[in-house]
Length: 406
Picture 1 (cartoon, rainbow, N blue to C red):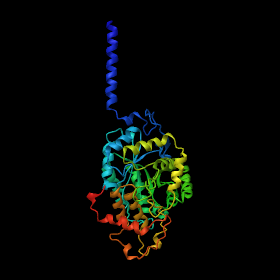
Picture 2 (tube, helix red, strand yellow):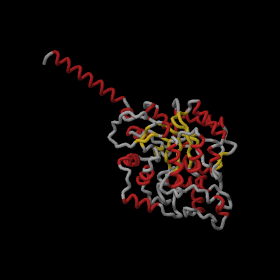
Picture 3 (cartoon, helix red, strand yellow):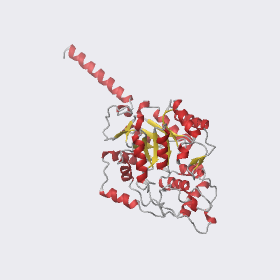
Picture 4 (cartoon, rainbow, N blue to C red):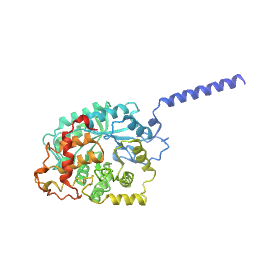
């Protein structure tokens, strides 16, 4: 072999070794499409939509991290190409934010979109309103606490949770806080999150003119889905990014977990609405992660999936998912915050997140069991729930030490 050939071979080997070493230290997520829309080398088939006027291009399947503290699972999602991760200061008293932030800091910052929310203080869940305890400076401080938990320079999207009635979306102290949070650069974009009065909340968010994103409870079991779709369409046309949550509608429709909802079908159903820019299903296992990503390969519902969703739409006293319609509140002689109690029930018996369930239970403002005072329950639930039994089941959680919860 000539000296020239030997030299060229050595140079080729040096370049190859250098390239291999470089590839070894670059996180897989950087090689794939980032939020600026660079080329994707992932083998998975991903469907992308743009999150309203934010201009952020993300897969239609994102990840809610509130039901897991498994950093390896979240890392697997990031490495496979998931871009948006939704957490909250509410989850584990900020520990979920800390877990997510620690992971994100090990990647290029443009590899992920982080969405979180703080605690606004006074919330009247029964009426869908904020109280005078919800003030401007404390909520800005809450955002700063989230930023500290995450350990990041900024939050991509910061939400105002429990925005429901129009008055709550326009509640001046918190509206001012959200404007300041964006102006100060604590968050690039701001939005609202709502579990109830969805149409009213979405319309109000658009009307304020300041919100970039709305995270909305959205699934096939919503009885007012036509009204919600109309509000979502209007918001999307106005440039507001729409993120769907609670797409799994409780995951099961019986407390004993013998009748699982076809969660793949329910996610497909939600994402068939092109005005839903992404969904944030809670993911707790690697199998769930693979299944949710696979949804993007074909959004068409099979005949079996359609049948499964139709079956799960039936009303039953053992159901898990509450519509949050609030029709029950005025019927209850104790004026209990039944929708919040039912949401706690869903977290515990549907999503198996007892920590989140107990935190939500605290928001309902009960410390004892009120239902034994009634000989029979006067509430006629629109979902057919046995309200008294459900309240008795979930209220027991108050007596369980936090150390025993998951």
